[in-house]
Image (cartoon, rainbow, N blue to C red; front, top):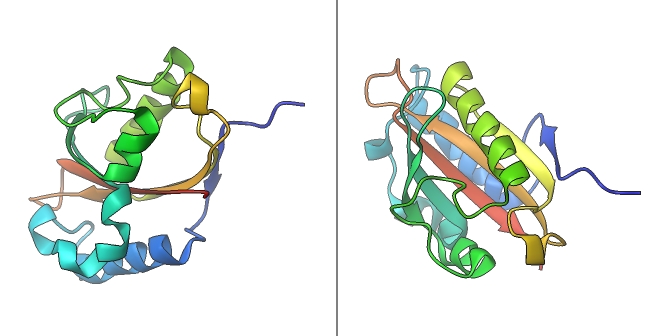
Length: 153
C-alpha cells in the first residue's frame, strides 16, 4: 500500500509552525494578509533553517525562490535560490506544488500540508509538515509566499 504524498491540514500541528502561523495572524492585524516588511527574522529564529520565500505572480507562476533555508537546501542537495519554485522536483511533485502555490494566490489564505516528501526521488521517505502563508504589499494581491517546512528527524 502506497502512502499519499501529502494531505491538507486545517491548521499546523508542529509547535514551531503553530507559532509562525500565529505570528502571521498577529502581523496582518485587520488586513487580509501581512506584507513581507512586517516580519523580522529574529521573530522566527527557530525556523530559519526551514523557511522559503517565493515571489508570486498570477496563478500559473512562475514562483521564484528568493530565500531558502539550509534544511531545504540539504534535502535537495543544492540551493533553489533564484530558481523557479519546484524546478528540482520530479514532474508529479512539481505539478502538485504548483497547484498548492496557485491555491495560496487564488484564495489569499494559508495552506498547511503534512505527509511524505516526494520532492526528490532519492529522499521520498522523509516525512514533513509545512505551511505556506500569503504576503501582500497592497493587501489585495499575493506578491510573496512565505513558507516553512519541518522535516522528521
